[in-house]
Length: 250
Image 1 (spheres, one colour):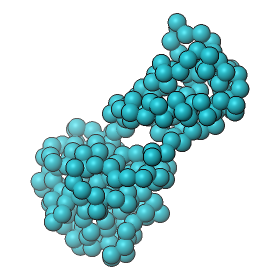
Image 2 (cartoon, rainbow, N blue to C red):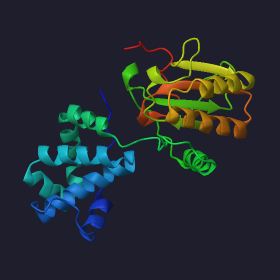
Image 3 (cartoon, rainbow, N blue to C red):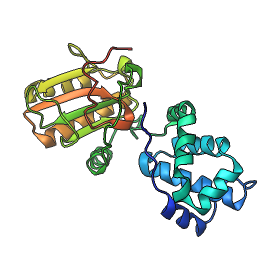
């Protein structure tokens, strides 16, 4: 059974009541507050505007006017109804993840030293999500390339290990190639240098070359003895998705 995190929204709804509405003009005041509360709760979890707008639309359209009214006026008493609504619409909510705006911000023109620094700083400051998933993601959903440093040989990394993430990594068109790759690479410092050099030499386009340049800078700063690379789902990227090594390639 897929677990859904229902964030308490009492404070969110209170804040919404004093915030200028960005909802649809045809909606009532109660519906606008409900929409804003659902959207803010999603944004706290995913920080993705397109996906959260989509999921909010799903919940607004699936809920009754009476439920929206009751929830806005007494959120604590009606959280179970919202949870049930989410479970009933799991497929639609999951489909919204295809609308994600989570991107690398990798330019298609030659990258500058400032842009490299900005990207690495963003990686250092990001919040890495917890993993609470009961079954493997199929390979086609593993669209984020993650590089971990400070990994001991033979160990699996986790969210405590520094990591660099490239989302929307279409591995079939990229230049990282190795035995078992792109699903898993374990590399010493010397081997990592060779991998990145090959990545730079064989980059398929400018954006791929820019990723390699960012990776080279990040690896040089980490000076780790051992690295670990794998593909992971975007929503848990950086937490060493535990089934990535063993799941069937579907």
